[in-house]
Every structure is written in structure tokens, then in C-alpha cells.
Length: 284
Image 1 (cartoon, rainbow, N blue to C red):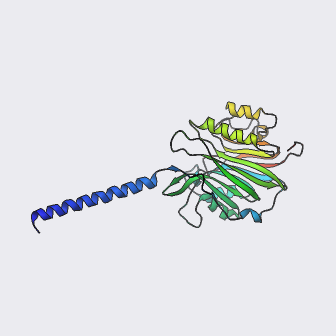
Image 2 (cartoon, one colour):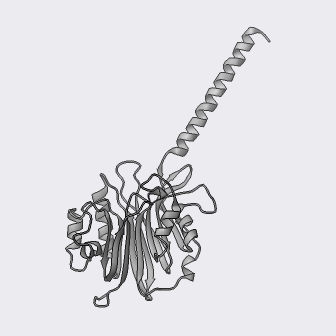
């Protein structure tokens, strides 16, 4: 082989290696990119999990931003999250991630496995060519239906959705909206949307979630001012509710048995817990 041939072969080898590196880089960039989930695709959930659960007389409710299982101490442990949710009939979960385990494909399913509960994963974004991040549910009561509603997004890769579920309580239907609202530009429009949805529902119903806004938000003040809306946290924890609280529950046609914000190390958010029952004094 001549010197010119050696130089040419070396040059082509370098070009091939360069193209391979570029292709690998493009694949990694494509996989790492965050994209909105196709909201027309069915949500992933446990098969017929509600069939084995009985309708209770009152609902033990939980609403928890699990922060991907990462605690305030920087340690990632779903075991702590599962322990906090062990006695809940129905839990709305936010900042739920996918897992690398095909037998427990997301953190909602992992939490359900430890607590013998049904589960649902409502992703908001895809990454690495699969559903990666979103909201979830755990339930130990019959769930008649669950729907996912994408929320407006104008600031790029900050995808959000709301889950509307109908559960059985004393044989009656209770409608639950679970949501994680944006904390920046889209907060107001998203919050207006879920409040409108909540107020359109037949009683008994409730809205819960990480709303990323405090009690002095005019939208929350207007909501609480409505005659048929109750704010269990404000009514029950008056004088003890943190002024910067952003985790909320609002009800219509339900009475509060108990409600509390549980500080913990399993997340960077408190766990919102409530016990609710139909308010027989109100018309449906």
C-alpha cells in the first residue's frame, strides 16, 4: 500500500469515527430531550385493581408531592413514602418518575406493590423514548373511572396535567381532581382551569394537590368565598396553617372529619391528609 493510500485510509477512518460519534451524540440528545406525553394514549394502571376493594363509609385521603422519592435529607427512598401512605384509601401523587424495572415501571406502581393498592400513572412528559415523569394515584377503594387533562404550557418543558377520578364512598360517587400546578408563568391559567373543572362537578367532589400558591392568592380567596366550597385546612388549622403553604384541598358536598399537614423527611413537601365523609345536610 502506498503512502497516499495509507493517508487516504486514515482520513476515511477518521471521518467514519467522527460520523459515528455525531450519530451517538444525536441519539443521546434525542433520548435526553423532554417532550410532552401524547395525552390520547391510555394511562398505565394496575389491571382491575379496584375490584377487590370495598366502598368505605368515609374516605382517608392523601395528597403528596413525593419529589421523585427524594427526601429533604437528599436520600432517595420510596420506603419512607410508602410508610406515610400506608393507611390512605386514595392518594394523589405528584412528581412521580418512571423506573428502570419493567416489573414496576413507575414509582406509583412501586408504592402500590408495598401497600397492596391499585395504582395509576398519568405521565406529563417522555424521556428516553418512554413515559418518564408526571402524576399518579394509589387507591384502596373502588375507582369507577379516571381521566387525564393536559394543562396549558407556554414556557417550554414544564408539562402538567390534572387527573379526574370517580371513586365509591358509601356506595355513592365522589369526584376527585388531583393536580400539580406550575409555579411560574402558567400558574394562573392552569389554576383557573382546574377551579372551573372543580366547580362544574356534581357533588360530592374535591380538588386537591400541589397548587404552588398560598392562601392570599385572589383565585383561592374567591374560591373559598363561595358558599358551597369548604377549605378544610383553613377551617381546621386556623392559626396553625403555615403562611407559605401551597398544598391544598377544597371540597363541595363533603364534611371534614380530620385534616392535617404531616411534616416528614421523605419529600420536600408535607403530606396532606384528610378524612372526609358525604355531607348529608347538603343536596347533591
